[in-house]
Image 1 (cartoon, rainbow, N blue to C red):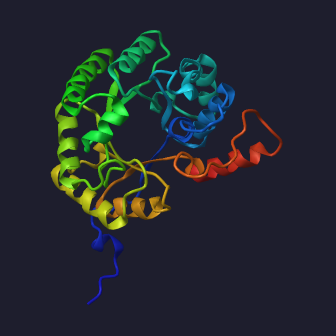
Image 2 (cartoon, rainbow, N blue to C red):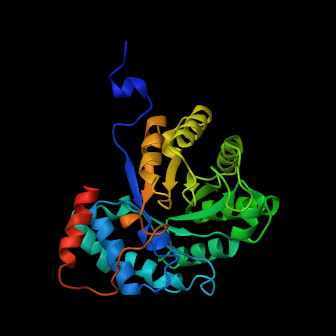
Image 3 (cartoon, one colour):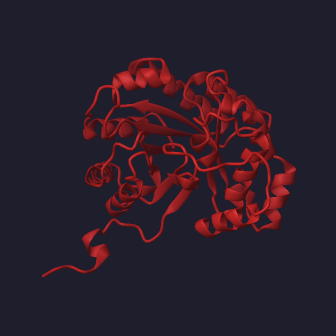
Length: 294
């Protein structure tokens, strides 16, 4: 007899999910055009006003290598300002419910995040990243996996002492563009290691759109068998090969309830138009953004 109840077929599938927005960071990171500070603030504000409570807004790494984030401190300072807090209050938003994240791939970036936090303008949460495939990891971080794990342990302790959270990201789960196929079991072990050294949550990243729905379901089923608390896991898919929607559904079927995304799939596919200033008709776009998040 065929089973027609969706939640009996997929008993771990959540009835609701949490969406985090990373447009201002991952969406803008590789654009050739510099997105103005004013525009970054505008989009970050309106994603929050639309209902997003977890938002990634900048990268605190070397701005020479990532000029898109040369204004990191200004963006963070605005989101910590009394003016923005008052605007949240007028909209019935509890400012304390927000979690503002900055990417901090290396320890000096973590140190910068802590210094900013001590000045009252830092993020609530940092993010470091490992790749299960060593060549990709070295290309991304500039150091070896053994040395990087030691660095992460130091950085997590620093964050804990400063009252900041640390997200540990696992990448190349479904393959590496440098060395090819990877093993899902390695990513599960990396996830466990992140939690053992003190990460507060784990981002499972399909960094280049390599994942397929069957492999996504298999992987997250493996993860939740080992670490069954879904609040610890975040799914991050890129739309490069137009598979992100299928992958997100497969992750939900496996039991994942927390996802990240960008407006229009920006960041891994052909970018939609982004303005650096307000323009006629922009209110309509923001209304649509709010509808998406509500």
